[in-house]
Length: 276
Image (cartoon, rainbow, N blue to C red; front, side):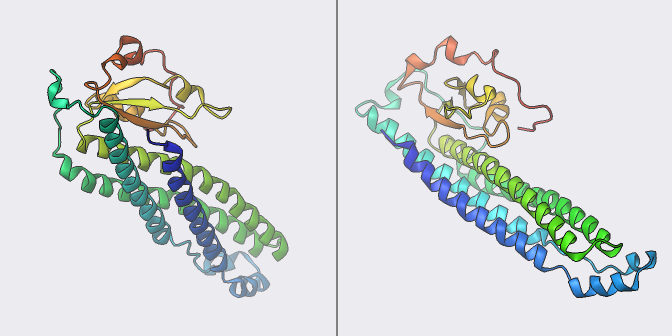
């Protein structure tokens, strides 16, 4: 059997690289502040200097590329891992062929060969939107602090405020990294499952002290790949979600396709405002 912990180590390394790139991006945003010009304007004083404030540049395009590259990398990892998991199932049940079982007839809404291309475009669009949201909030916070500097607070106070702002954004970056990795990875898995004609997926949560009621209530449940509710039950289902969808062939494991495993009516609701 495949040791999924080994697969997840690849994700941990990718997350580490992304967090390092986040850190560099935050540093570039801070280093872009033209302190000399701000100090000159501070000495001039008066409300009129606010009209002469130089623009701050937090490079949302650069962040968009960073997030997009990570998303595509993790999407590809999920797709590759799906291939490994499906091959492992075929090996486990070697000697049996799907064609030997009656009733196995999985159809696609899309040709599976074009799914990866569509998925990549979706990930890229998502990354651009996310980068714009994050950089917009950071820029707004920086402008507020620099306006306070122009109107009288000492530079050391402004620098402390900027450091606190960047630290809070680093915490947000950590949350986004884990959540978006789970998002891209599970979409990559679904892509790989579609290519390998998987007909069911099983929700798998990491059960420990950090597991949410949302994921605990779904752990072990199965859903057909062509079920329209699959999109609203594909992790992440909350911030820092670590759950995944595993492949199940009903032809190989018919005992899993039981009513108790298909009943999603008692699952915990998603967080308010959460868009799956």
